[in-house]
Image (tube, rainbow, N blue to C red; front, side, top):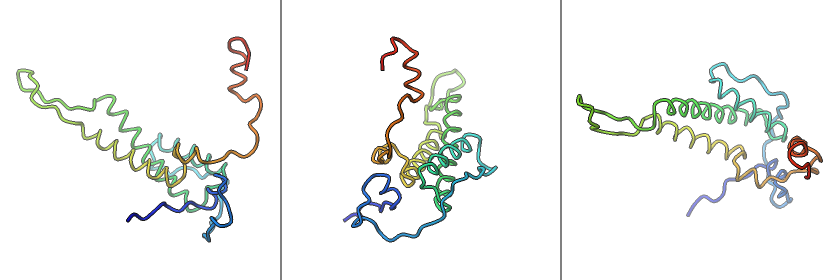
Length: 165
C-alpha cells in the first residue's frame, strides 16, 4: 500500500480555504521573509530571474520563510539549468546525426542535452510541487478579497476595439 498524500502546511491550507480545526496539525513555524535576499552569485542569469520572481510571489502570499527559501533556491537553479539547456538545444538540435565520409547518414541519436533538460525539468516540477506553485496546486488556492475593477488588462481592453468590457 502507498504512503498516502503528502502533508500540506497549515499556511497552504489557509490559502486553499481548507483550514478547518480538525485538519490543522502541529507544525514548527519559522520566521517569515518579507525582504527578498539577493540570489547567490553562482546562479546563472536565468536562475536569478526565476529566484527573484518566485521568492517575491511566495513572500507576497506570506508563505516564504527562512527554511523554504532554500527550496526556492533549488527550484530556481534547476529552472535556470533547464532554460540554458533548452537554448543550447535550440542551436544544436535534439538529434545528433553521424555521417560517413560520403555524407550518408549512418546513425542518429538523441542529444544528451535533451536528456539533461528532461531531468532538470522533472527536478524543477517536483520542487515546484513542494512549494505549492504548480498550476494544479495554484488552482486550489483561494484568492482572498475582491478582484480590482479596472486592472491593467481591463484598461488595455477598453482602449482596444469597441471599449466594451
